[in-house]
Length: 188
Image 1 (cartoon, helix red, strand yellow):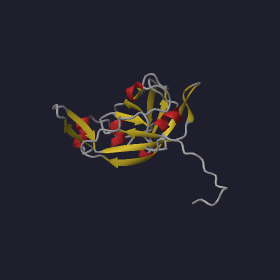
Image 2 (cartoon, rainbow, N blue to C red; image 1 turned 90 degrees about the vertical axis):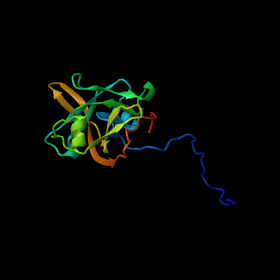
Image 3 (spheres, one colour; image 1 turned 45 degrees about the vertical axis):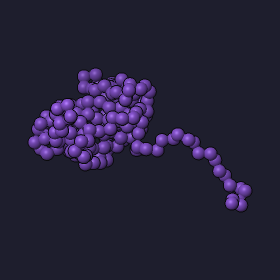
Image 4 (cartoon, rainbow, N blue to C red; image 1 turned 135 degrees about the vertical axis):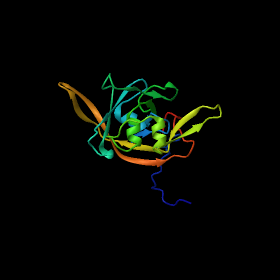
């Protein structure tokens, strides 16, 4: 068997999850106006259930550099973050609704005009799905996953700075016909 008595074995930790991404991610989900921060992004930004998120858009920047987020930054333009089953604490998968910018991201242009779900269907970016109850839902043909970049201080008004996190390295994934997004477990 083992002849080397100088080995340095250590017990492996049971129960460690290895699924999901190890990168902080911001995801445009398949359901119209629905977004998600993964648990790593929650840790990086300090975001938790009940906090508020603001998405900032630079309409003059290319798609890959046109977006940033901040937590609890702008009381006029924000969406409430929710953890699955209302679980508390930092490090949870968080979802939220945010209209307007969803259609710009799906069109891959910070300068794009806002579009309704029906307008996105006309553009070929979404499709409709009828549930067994007869309800019509709008589902995106693609999901876009941004990496959440390193935070930086940004002055939004004289004497008021916030920490902003750029959304970088977008990755586009094709969704299947019934894809609605990942709203399952609170961890990745």
